[in-house]
Amino acid sequence: MEEWYSGLMPSPLLLPAQLLIVGIYTKVCWDFTRGDGYFVQARPMFSQGVRWFGYIHLAAMVLRYIIRMGLYPEA
Image (cartoon, rainbow, N blue to C red; front, side, top):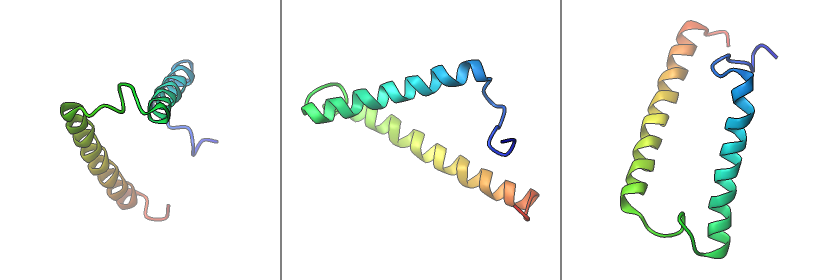
């Protein structure tokens, strides 16, 4: 269990954060199922923000992997 627990977010905040993510995902899926709603309509500024967030997240995960493998090659 210690390998899965990062300690970055305290347990009392983790469940509400996960429920928020599931709620947003549900709203996105519901909008696409109906073919109407906030997440179906084209919003260029929103899509650019999401795209840049994705680029930054990808770069951070690649950098994290490189650092971790450098520090703990046996992992």
